[in-house]
Length: 216
Length: 263
Image 1: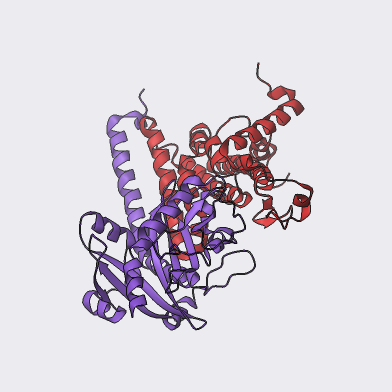
Image 2: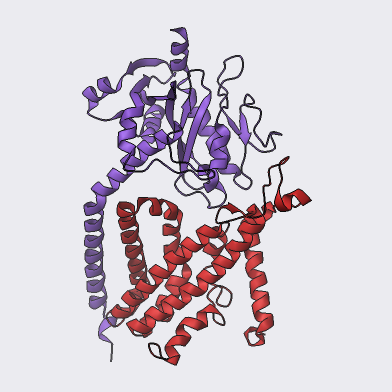
């Protein structure tokens, strides 16, 4: 197996499927609803969380033996907030365009319950390397769902992917592609409730394929 | 036995050290990066103004600013003057200053005037300063005015370029935190381009603004004198914000454009 032992590999692969933070643990739903109307936004958010959760897990893990248990939640909050602010400031100074694209996500990262959840459940009790893997794995599991939801919402809601029109031109009078046959974009896909329904469908498919996941 | 980290004294000590360390770290980052960030924001304002005038690197579908390297030079070459119009609370013009007059008085470039602060001033009954950027594009004189308002979640703002008859010649909108895919689309070409050619005045010359309207029976925006553009589905409140800031902020410039006509 080389670099990763079997146990370590599981840390990454588990959250991608059978222990997915969104579909199984039902964490991080708020941001999954808010920002998945566009595929690009989903991808940007997935990368941001990957970054913050990977580093944050390591920091908390390194501090785990000196953090007083009475104030550990506050300490976690401070770590995540400080990380996010520093990243935001550095981006604003050296990658201004990128920081404008990220704008709203930066704030949303702090509120993402997956991050606090992993700090509390994993990083406080495990070493830095394993915590890092766990962070990457969970962020990737979160990102995968985000990208799937973003893909369907943008495709069916706006008829575009990453901003490029893929289903033709919807403007009345000059329709091309699918629109020429009377197809119309479903504006409802752009609203938050549809994100929840798409996630529901993913959960349904996942549990019907793996019966062990069904709770009584 | 009680763990060392469970003691109250340890907890308090840890909290104090943490706050000092993190605070110092953040303060250091913020103050060392501040000049770079301010400079970025300054250039962005120039890019915004130039964008509204039609000086940009747009391709077929996306909005692209003139590059940050070229922006200061282009700003110098294309903006012939930056007027500062001071109005009283009734909207009457008190005085109109050129860029040089304003700079001599305040040592500040007019394009750095904080529109939000001026709005607050006006609410408190103080005179309001209105910056207006005069530029030349393809032999036409354009007037670019900044506008500022609120969307669904946070601030929205923009720059609108008009000719002397207050017909829109270009617009740029931006936002702090509107919903991606919905309200955030006010900075997309399909929305901003609709404003081109729209009249701000009615045919009788009364200021009407431009309404971001749902179902205005003109989705292709052929009718330029209906004082309306097509709204974005699912972004009603952001669209209303755009309507409101155009109405309230651009209206204030009407007296100035009246003086242009009389000359």
